[in-house]
Structures are given as structure tokens and as C-alpha cells.
Image (cartoon, rainbow, N blue to C red):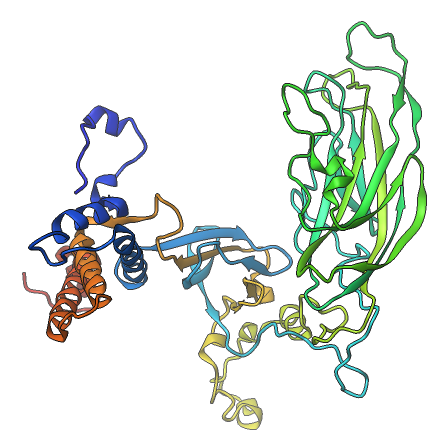
Length: 510
């Protein structure tokens, strides 16, 4: 059982764990089950604790779906991509809606008449195409912009670190901006990276190529600054820049500090070529132009990353006279990255330009939703008799509203919305199985008995030589306990029910 554990009222009301007394942890459930139900002369003479723990977790998951209160919710401002990533502990949705300026929810309805299918690459005559030299990097020419502070798929990485060190796309060219920093007691820069996951399970050899530009070491004159004991204008030495492009079994690192001292124990792996454990191309100290490597062996890999890293090792630092803005800047650029299969693949290939988004999905999100068509089919004029006869027949209910619609793309784990939901605040209410974290693995006390009966029935059902009538009796006990828990947790209140029925114009005697 869950008790107050000597917690005083003052400690409770000045704390943050409010309402926890109504729950008991899954660990307590398991411990109490082992004490009460397992042992000589008890329902179960002997069972391993790990078996009880397994059935306890299964019981919690099953009860979470239709008995326990396990509904969670997430809210986002829907981006122009019209997609929302499913939560990490998502099992099923209960409601999808958008909220207006008054905070009221407007329900969205799932449409069954579209999807985002895998679009197969075809020849002009309709035959399936299995070409060599097929580009496998999405947005390889950086024609699609990035969204700060993080990249959207297909690229990932920290795109904004502040104070002039950032990653942007300028005129469809990926640009790494570097500035000096002095916040760790010495001058240093950032080691930036961007990456994209690749599936090479059907590829033996790859050809890689890119065009990049770097800066050679040079000097710059700063007319004013805020560094003490320094006479301005002052001439600084700017470091050479380095950019690397290649293949790795690991993505880039979130540690972007290009320094190692008492404040930062480990220098960013992005600063070292060792992060590329397959192959890489390098431009440094003013090198520019195109480089390539042919027939890179990837037969031993299924999933790898195309990785780009950029570094500038500053040895001097300065800030503006206001003491806020960096004044030393260098950058690198890369464009037209290419990773192509060197030989014909054996699996179906996605259509060109539709690796992630099929033409079906592109057409759906770009079209005016059919639910926006609010024709009144009951007006009294001659037009009704000429063109509207019978057009209401067969209307799909999910389209008979103006809030919008959505569908779930389980292939990529995303919700896709119609265009009239763009920019709105979208709310996803969903069911989890309550096994995501230790904090979630709790049982309401009104369902505690149902947990014990559930575990007891499942443990005995898995044991050998148990009479069928005994198993049947435990199943009846489990069913009754679960039914009782549902009634208790339904939380009906007589006064609330009475008030609702009054609104239905029904006479209530009480």
C-alpha cells in the first residue's frame, strides 16, 4: 500500500508532488503481490519475481487502454510542412483538434480516402526502374530552407548556437558561420555539423561528391571593442576553416565546443576526422571546388549517415564596444552534395523527388480541402433543380465540416493535416501504455485490486498442471475486478448527471 511516509502537511503543501496519494507504484504492487499471493498455503506456492513483474507490466498496459486514465496530450503550432511527429510513447489517438484564440477546441476528423504511399520509380512506359547512379540524399542541393533552431527532416543538427555561430541556407547553399568565443577562459570556436540518415541495406558501393569553399588564414582590423588593455584599431589573425563531408555510422555530436579545458572536459567529436569511420572528403585553408570518391564499400552496413562538419579554431577573441556582439567571423560553404549507388539496386526505388512525400500527399496538402465547400443544397431557386439534385447523397461525414481533416502516416510516424489547418494550434490527445517512464508506472488505488486479480490470473494461466476450472474461476475474478475498477474510475457524480439531464428537458425527481 502507499502511505504518507511521515510526510507532514507542511512538506506536502510546499512541495510539488500533489495528489500522489491516490496512486501506488508498480513496484509496490509487485512487492505486495509477492507477500500476499505467493507462498506455502497461498494461491501460488512458488513463482519468480521476474515472472510477476512481466505480468504486472502487461496488466498495467492492458488496463491503460480502456480502464485507467492514461490519456496524454501534446500541442504544437502546425508548421508549413502540415505534419506533426507522433509522440515517442504513442499507442493510439483519442482526439485530434485545433484551438482557437479563445482556447476552444475544434475537432479534426481522420480521412480514410488519402495517404502518403511509397511512390515507385517508373520508366516512361510504366515499367519499374532500377537505375544505377541514383541520388539517395534528400534535399542534396539545399533548395529547401532550414527552420531554426533545429533542422527539420531530412537533415538534423543544431542550426543556431548564437553569437554568430550558426548554420543557414543562403541562395540554396549550406553555409556554416563561425565566430570566436571567449566564455571558457580562452579563445575558441564551434565545431558544427549536419547529418542525414541513409538506408544502404540494398547498396553495395556508393559514389560521393560535393562542392565546398573554405577560407585561408588571414587578418582583420577591428576599429573598436571592449577588451581591456587593448589599443584599437586592432589587427586580429583569423584562422583557416575546414569542412568535411562523408559517411559515418554515427550522427554528428550535440557537443559543439571546439575547446577542451576545465569548463568543457571533451572537445567536440565534430572537430576530428575520426568521426567519419567510413570515408570523408576534406577542404581546408582556402581549398575550394569539387571533390569526389568512387566505389565506397558499404556492404557491411544497413543504416549510415551522410555527415558534414565545419570547424574554425580561433586563437583570438573580441567583442564589440557594447560588450555583447562578436566581431571575428569566418565561414565555410558546401553545395550539391551527392551520394549515389554505383551499381543497380535490387529493391524498388522511390520516384525522383518523392523519397519522403508521394504525389498523393503533395496534392492533398496543396489542394483546397473539400470540407471547405459549404454549398447550401436547400436553397429555393431553379439552380437546385438543374444541378444539385441528389448531390448530397453519399456525402462522407468527415468532409461535412469545416474544421479540417488529417491522416496518420505510420511509415514515417507522422500526422498529416489538410491545408486549412496550416498555422493553427494543433492538439493531439492520445493513449499511452503507462510503461514509458518510472513516474508513469503507477496504478490508481481504485484499480489496485484489479491489478492483483489480473496478475494472479495471468500467472496461474501460464503455469503447468493447473485445473481448467481453477483458471476459469480466476478469469471470472479478474473480469469482475476490472469491471468494478471501470465503474469506480468512471467518476460519475449524481449532481453532474442531474444537471446534464435537466438540459435535456427531462423532469428529474430528487
